[in-house]
Image 1 (cartoon, one colour):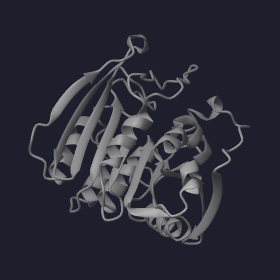
Image 2 (cartoon, rainbow, N blue to C red):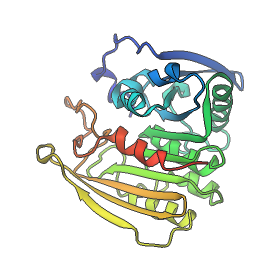
Image 3 (cartoon, rainbow, N blue to C red):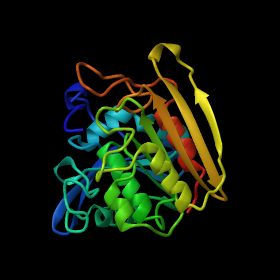
Image 4 (cartoon, rainbow, N blue to C red):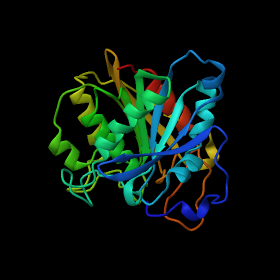
Length: 290
């Protein structure tokens, strides 16, 4: 993303009252993260809560990711915790731009962070999820490949499966995966990039195969807002407890569905209003348990 949204967000906006910034040291690096707890967390002192890790795009900060996606509002409605981790140099190791095996140990950081959260918050270990935008979405795909024993499902926005992830982890472990991608995305191509990442449809097929899903599934078109210049084709398949879905945003750009269409001269393209990204992501994630 490299600061595509940075100038468009309210730099002086205070963090919501229920947000806490904290840090931990992993491999001699101080790693920061932001935790948002919904009002239900205080009003239900004996309940355990789902948690969604929301990873920022490249060049963004954890606060910018929180403000742009607006996921805290969905957390309030549905009663889940949101964690916004910060990548080193505002980046995530997905195997291109740095060494997959020798670069920053972001997978280890996530494991350490989850263990920390389980010790400090009432986390339901069966309902741990991840989502992300752009570089953060690529990293959510890596989490699905490497940590299916910890994460029940992931959702990536504008980020198909990185080729290095496919090469290093062919593997085992079923996990729910939702991919949301604009067909006119000029930052991360819908049709993929050789040696970089698969196309959105190929990513959909990869996760169907890995989850052992053979059926054709269902497909529907969503076009609830004629004025936004987009429509959404939703494809979904399932096998037992696991689902794989692809939401193709026709003529959509490199944007979070339903977010404010910050698009002042930047090549991020159209933002669909046909779906609320946070609502569809949560509904998809919440259907999965580890």
